[in-house]
Length: 91
Image (cartoon, rainbow, N blue to C red; front, side, top):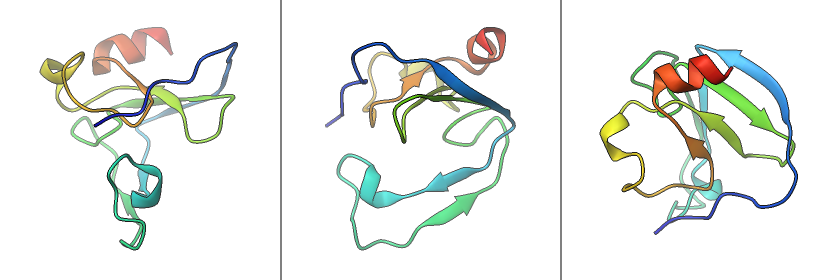
């Protein structure tokens, strides 16, 4: 299951390098809304990779991934996933 990326005119509102990831299960496709939230540490193996670009729609962004081989095939919660190196280049 996946959520489509948002449509329409969006802009990048901020860039964070080596971001922590605020895991919020209620916002993720198939997530348990009663599961606890957590702040996961930064690094290239985090779910958002080495850079996060916040979009003008809350909870959506462009970010890297720890598993570049899954781009285009794995589920998504609506964010635009890039390889870490492509996300860094775009940022």
